[in-house]
Image (cartoon, rainbow, N blue to C red; front, side, top):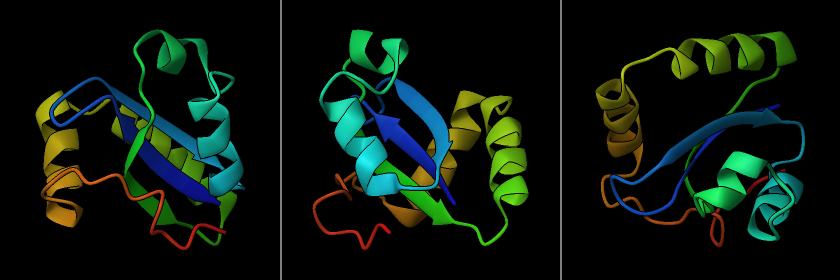
Length: 94
């Protein structure tokens, strides 16, 4: 199971989600089928991903992060990906 964060651009709009197939889910977002919010705000850049063995842990972390302040989310992203590079083309996703 994957916890992921998408961004529209560096310091742009953020989207937090979970999925069991990150590559499939990112493709859905990029095709405009991922979520209404992501499509409306063009949130398609994978800037953070974390793998979990237990789906319950991934879902619990997603719920926590969704309630975080924006600055905490940005800190999380920048610790792992300081340049906000799109990780999708180079990540080992599934």
